[in-house]
Length: 521
Image 1 (tube, rainbow, N blue to C red):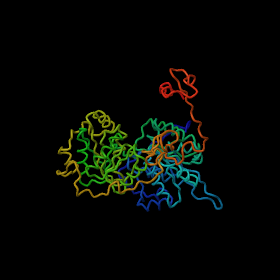
Image 2: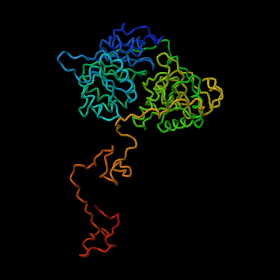
Image 3: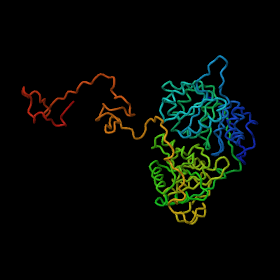
Image 4: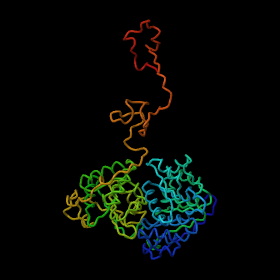
């Protein structure tokens, strides 16, 4: 917090084997949490967890940094859950105010972190609530009224609820900023500052991310008390990504990219694959083209409603589709089992984006393949990324869909074409996954403000102010108000009042008509 000591002890430890032999019992993790994790096969700590838990369980402020896919969520999740007061005294009522707050940058990450914490706290009785935009307010408000222990949320919706006095943050004991470098970026910083201002001064603060630039660490100290900076890396390991990821970087022509991608998706032993694309429009276009070529594909990007985005992720997790085409909303923190390949269809913006994209594969000690396609116009951008990360691909190999090294490097059958063979089209596809009704706010396809759609009963008949509200309200916007007074119009002719010259019987038909430019209301 402001005015605290700038002390920040940095700890560097080796990460030779991500599946460390240290058990959670050895680290002092409570029995209910250990039992809940054992139900999903998690019994031993990763390196970042082993280094973080002793300090975090004692209530110290921590900055945790480790490569993607090495278990950072439980690094802050276990201490957060263990410090909860989840048992009320006999004869007293359990408090319903949140005791811990986790702030995340994206809706998808919010859902995932909340699910992980719910699993870890299932036996201890921890009540975890995900709060994010795109969903209706009412279910989230109802859950807050019933009482929650942990809130995981995105900044916008957290502020919306707190400003309406529906979310009380005055009892928060633990604050976590996940993907902290993104949360403390200038785009999120004002919202984060507004949230932190509502928290008690005496609290534990933890920041976690795979990338933690020096300026972000300096900024983080404003919210922390004598933090310990833990970097779970091998001092002799200069690689920014985990060694289990096989990387390919090719210079590709824009008009040949889809053909090249279609062949990459037919690589031997390919499992779930995420294709990252920079823009929303191209993301949807590539997803549609892959679907026409026979691949079981789903898209995730900002132009989709929240229900469609969650439908796509559920279908991808459950195996109904095995190709997810996404913008960078899915690049940070999303943990999906058995993602064997990541394809950067668009060159990443910078080295941080590259690390987070590639980090979707090769997680938890598994191996993975990352393919980056660099347009001619993006070569300079890629060379900056390559230099920053110390990679060996400064001059990407010129590559086409027919290049021999594509087939040999990824184990693609030479008979593969730009379409998936009919015999390989075995997955049910996105249509097999139902869309959940989230009561979405700002849902695409809703009538614009002030425009009715009387043909299908959506909106009132005709146009204008008498129609329904912008979210399809069941009552007219002016319901309950007094009837409007009919607007009076004055007839004018050349700027003069026409009624003065009218006869007692009224003006003639030609005189009654006025120029629209001169008519006033």
